[in-house]
Length: 282
Image (cartoon, rainbow, N blue to C red; front, top):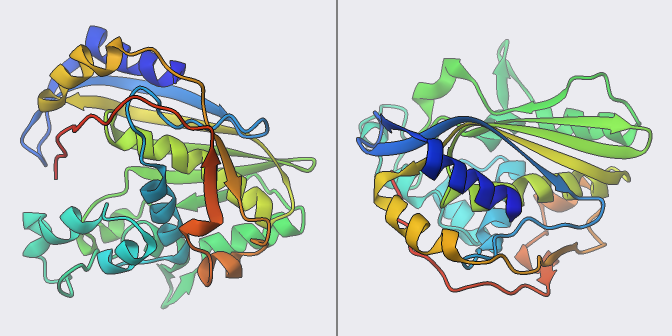
């Protein structure tokens, strides 16, 4: 929470106004932010200065791991985060690559599980898990969602676009890079996902989870979010963090692909202030 609030305050104090072409809105923006999460000691980065909705974040992460490309599949997991981008994005609605209602196209997990190559596909996620199971780290255990050649085939370019796993002895670390971040809304999801991704992959590869490092290149607060941030959230004092737990029966990538649901994840001792209804920009 301290890292999160310091970034929010930094944007308020030092941000520069930029007009975002996609949304047509002004954003108060800073460049480069680095956060870190101590997964080894279960320091779960769930926001407490407003109600944090961690379940949709985990559901979205599971959908990425499964390579889903349809908002309906994400809804079945327990999140509506892709409804707007799949169905309200005007550019995507007019795209010849859109297959119909709820179609997201070749975004995020599609690239992670089915990256097109020489007439076939590369399953990046499977390759990384296989290497880690064998104790292999060639300094390139990288899951990339960023495929410029296929941006036009999806409803949204990936924001959190790279996850680099590193093995030191039996301890697994993660460096995640994000090109763009809506700090009041998106970052509260993204922090949970970076933390959980390391914990989950460490679990299924029989490794000890270490540190998760989260780099954000463009961190911003939209103009219609600024008043709520300044007058409500930044005036609240952080509460003690919750702890995050995983069903110990989850032992493989196949488990994540098949039977795992939100019921297999839970948190303990979570206390927070009430929700803040920040406007969301499509």
